[in-house]
Length: 428
Image 1 (cartoon, rainbow, N blue to C red):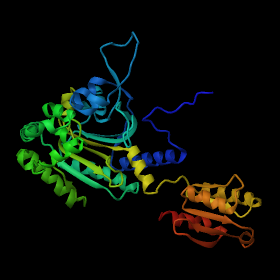
Image 2 (image 1 turned 45 degrees about the vertical axis):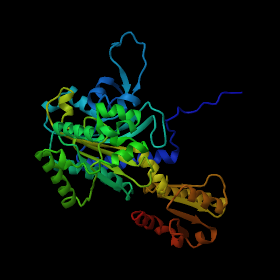
Image 3 (image 1 turned 45 degrees about the horizontal axis):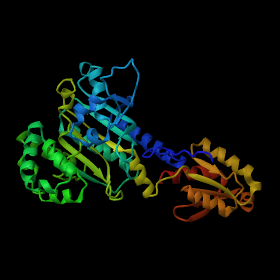
Image 4 (image 1 turned 90 degrees about the horizontal axis):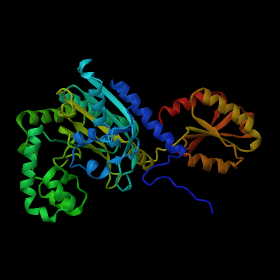
């Protein structure tokens, strides 16, 4: 018996419709990034482990559980250098920024990137070993107006993809001193419950108690509920409190965004300071985050560069795909041409060529299905419109145009079909 090989657990094979959707998400994002002045960079998948240890933090899940290390036996490589598959993009972008001394060439940069990231932990629904991020980083400013733009940008991408039901959660961790104050405050409050925490959170309590808020264990979550009264008012300095208040006002007044201020939101990476945010969807279950980000004002300096402010975000591409599939947006073509019998295939091909010349994505049946079978195939492909060619209609120089979403159909003069479709597709 021949061996049957399977893809590595925690990786994805994208079907043609999923690949179409993947590319649509990327292209839509690229167009919006261009509109906002972000320039795309492509960085390597391999990185030195120290880049992430220094930036992400030793006590984070990425370092403790998820790092995907590369085994090598090359004598020409420095044995002291640990190579990993990148787990996230922000630290890598900052490494690129510092390595190329970009701060000497300009005081402000906007970058965007797309590509695979990796985690080594056991995969689960919504958390794969290989996954893809859409990311953006703006480096060189401390302005709360930039924070607002970055948040608005991430929401604009999701809006453009048709994702309307989502919520923005917003918080501030404050500066480095504020974070330490918050950690000490949490340690004091949580200490009486230490023995009831999971093993991971007992360890986190010593290294980084903020991470307890990220724990998915039910018991740890219930303990965290007891500290819902702890707010930024108790640990933010005057400057950081003003920054956060201004940001909330800017989002409301300038961008028309009403965020949910969530004082339990911490994000899982140590480099975050001040603004942090997360975008959630009610359709994704427990792993409901589509993406998130925030400020990391100390990261450039910590990795060897100058002291400059920076803010960014990342969206999970597979999470977006999963959501779009759930809300029935997945499709590969706009128009399908069906015939009442296979003798009309030549007429169908003529029309198909005309549609494609006008950049209308379209296809026909090559398997001699019945009309019913062709319509069923078109429905499965989630097309918007079907053009039905029938002998009687063609004698009148007409076709039947069927709106698959509204279950309506009409006879249309064949000479008018292309301008009519263009008009209708604008509203899809």
